[in-house]
Amino acid sequence: MKAKDLWIPFSYENRRPVIIQRLLFIPSHYEEHLKFAMPNLSTIFQNENACHVEFCSGNGQWIIDKAKNEPDKNWIAVEKRFDRARKIWVKMHNENLSNLFVVLGSAQDFAKYYLRDNLVDGVFVNFPDPWPKKKHAKNRLFQSEFIRDLAAILKPQRTAFIVTDDETYKGQVIDHFLENIHFRPEFPKPYFINNFEAYGQSFFNDLWVNKGRNIYYMSFIRE
Ligand SMILES: C[S@@+](CC[C@H](N)C(=O)[O-])C[C@H]1O[C@@H](n2cnc3c(N)ncnc32)[C@H](O)[C@@H]1O
Image 1: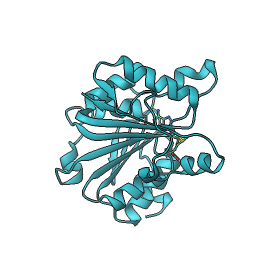
Image 2 (image 1 turned 180 degrees about the vertical axis):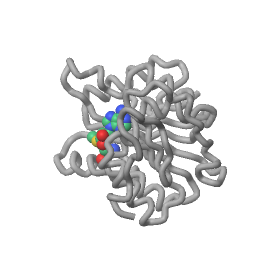
Image 3 (image 1 turned 90 degrees about the vertical axis):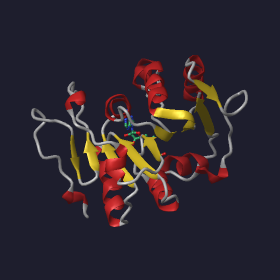
């Protein structure tokens, strides 16, 4: 499979969700998500194995390693940028990762509209864009609404795991999870750890570790 093999078969005006060879395309600025007949996860993966979702997968290094090293679990990579989702899609096919599925679309839309009756066994978000300027703060993924949607898709006693290098965003993530009655922090106060050797590697993890930045690992358990 090559990058040129993935293209979205309709114009912006006629856009709609579609699954193309193990990639779900979710259009942006679109209102009719619930009309799409999304197959359930056991149909997508052809098994009943536990399913983990990584939102904001970037080039997919972290989740591709997971899919290879933990083949008895299913993995869904959600990335809104076409070039990055396509990179994951090409690797998924070329490495025959039948336990991986790619979503090209927004994390918020996928969590809210596409998992519906499916519950997942784990959520991961590695280095979500921090939008450090105050005037851009509304673009941050971790707002109360997204955390409510995570509570709806996670099985009880499973976790949402978030990693960031941004101290301010770390504080916001913790505040929002503490506000939600369905989650409790896994790590004791101050609710994060700075080292997690076995967590896995991602492009941004390597970048910031090499620059000597503090990394904040946070985990919240769905009650
Ligand atoms: C800083 S990068 C981190 C990438 C990867 N997780 C890593 O650790 O290398 C953030 C990624 O999240 C994607 N992203 C940002 N907002 C998103 C959203 N609402 N839904 C899906 N992907 C999003 C961006 O396109 C980008 O690829």
